Image 1 (cartoon, rainbow, N blue to C red):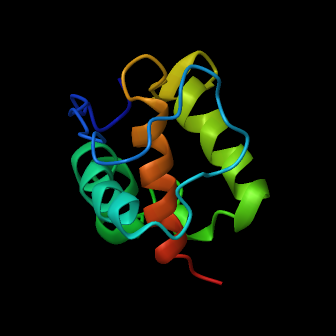
Image 2: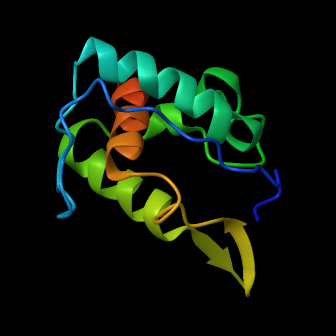
Length: 118
C-alpha cells in the first residue's frame, strides 16, 4: 500500500447511472450533484489520508486541486487511480482498479473538479 496504508472503503453509487464494463475517456458525472456528494465522501474515505482533507496536500502526495480541468485532467486522474504509481520499485500509490468501481472513481473526479485551484 501507499504511505497512508489506507484500507479501501466501499462506495455506494447505486443512485447513479451505472456505466458498464468499458472504461469511459471523460467524466460522465461532471456537475452531477449526487455524484459530487458521493465523491466527497469517497475521497474522504479513500484518498484524504494521503492527499489531504479537501484535497489540500500536506506535501507527501500530490495536491489534486491542481489537476487540469476537463478531459486532460480526466485522463491523468484515471490513469493514476486505476494503475497507481511506483518509483524505483516502491509503491507510492496503490492501483484502485478492481477495488473501486469506475462509477466510484468518476464521482471522486467530479468532486475534485469542485475544489480546483488555479
